[in-house]
Image (cartoon, rainbow, N blue to C red):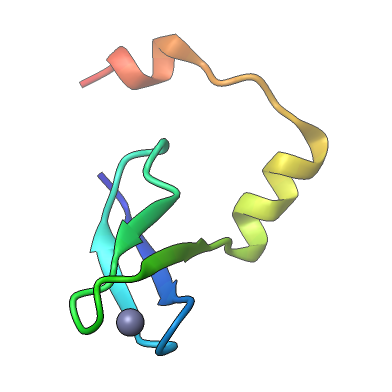
Length: 61
Ligand SMILES: [Zn+2]
């Protein structure tokens, strides 16, 4: 799984976590508040064009 950048809503703690595609939020290790995933330029680009996910790609390997 890829590393994503997360940032806490409450204390602005930034962390990198291993996460699946559905893990948009995590809980902060410092204060227990919700952390939002920071979307990279590359990911924002894909969201923008709404490319369908390839199941074949995820099964390879
Ligand atoms: Zn926090």
